[in-house]
Amino acid sequence: MMKVNAVENAFHPGDSMPTSTAQEAIDYLNGINTLDASSYWPNVDPVLFLQNLKGFTVAPLKFYEGKGTNFCAYAALTYLPLQFDPLGFSKFMVEFYRNGQARMGKVMLKPSRAVRNEAGLIKYKGALDIQPAGQMWILSLADHFKGYLNIFNRRYDKGDEDKIWASTNFAKFNRMLRKLFLLKVNARGADLIRPGVGDRYTYLKEKMKTGTVFLYLNNRLLYKKDHVTVRLGIPTHYVALFDIQMTENGKINIVYWDYGQKTLQQLQPKFFRKILFGVTHCETPVK
Amino acid sequence: MKQSINIIIAIGFIASLSSCAYSKKFTASYYAENKDLFHSLQERYKQQYDKQPFSVEIKDKLSKEVGLEIITDSLRYIYGLSSEGSALTDTLRKYGFNVDLTMGIIRDMQKLNCTWLTNLDYYDRLQKKYTVFVSIRHKQLESTFKKDKYFTLAMFNTPQPFDEKGRMLDNRDRKQLRKLNGAILFKLDDRTGYALTATFR
Image 1 (cartoon, rainbow over the protein chains, first blue to last red):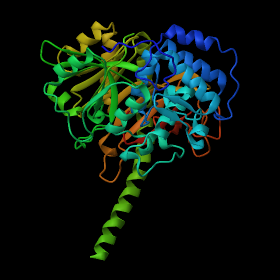
Image 2: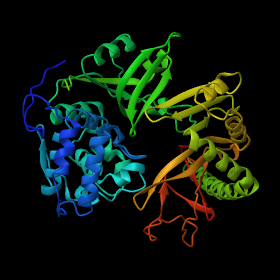
Image 3: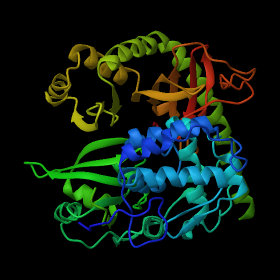
Image 4: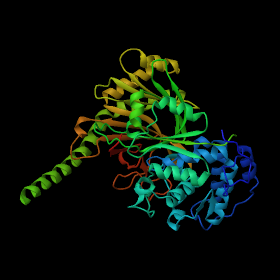
């Protein structure tokens, strides 16, 4: 694992991602006695905002992308700051709330007015409804980072969270990781081509020893939502991989994180090969 | 040639209109015919869910494959099991389910052509609430011209507000339509709404 010296928090440009503990983040947030309502985020209540940030610190895996949205990529990468630098993330978010813009890594996030007005208003998306800070963060990432999938819908309009405006191709996902968190990122695979990494199980098992692994999957097959018999063989979903095991009968157990929970699912190796299109490995800091 | 294309378009349009009308008739009559069984399913499901949260999927038309999602404090387990043999009951027993109760739920799902049963969370005035959510896959809803192939039912614990067109409203903001799973719900009775959807969950 890459060794990281403790550096100033809040992801200012540097050589690597800083680290902090949940307790440091809680102490920092508890130290903010009052937070004035921000004119930049007219629909984000400051009390709810702080509660939300504390919630992320205490239970980072409850971070939720919202039902039916195209926010899975942004939620998946949020695992990194919440897990490795909750203090930096909290400081960033407070500055972001107060000033309507803030820097993370190499990126100056300065969201459009449409996005700032929408944060806090997204409804009927499950737990995302009560996560105004989550809405601010995710909407701003989608507003800032663009890939080829976003060419025909670059400006936010109400309801775009479910549409191609929010979608993320594999190159964009990896670019976000590099720019936001200053990590060494190694990616294999592509939007339409499966990764040439040989035995998936062995490769992933090895990669997990040295950092955090994200998978780019065909979720229409992994978690079917209809009974269509002919499906496009394309990836649609990002998850953080937490564990992978081979069972005695040759099946693969994967534990992954998405939608605010960890899931264990058993797959046939052939099926796993079919649905896996991208593997991203980040050399994450030592806690 | 141009005339033929126009005729094909017209036939397609008429077919789609008639299938929409038929779907609405189907939803009302299907619910009325099976209302008692739906609400019995709701009660028994909640009874077991309170002890061990779970969701059930009937994966195939012959009801031979059952998907079981068991939600614990730390992990959601997704199983694909045969309804024949002992794998399903063994799994239920392992997690401390009331096996007879749960197998009864699954059998009734098969009778009702349910493909998905879950407790869906939603937020009302910042409070987390649940509704029992059921998706029905029925051959009468399947059509080449329609994308909405599932009759989804949301059974709430308390009466819900509806507008004059029978659309469910947000409890907090009575001018806003409430969506569940991305769909607007229509009234079946004061605690039950339905939608026709392209996906079952």
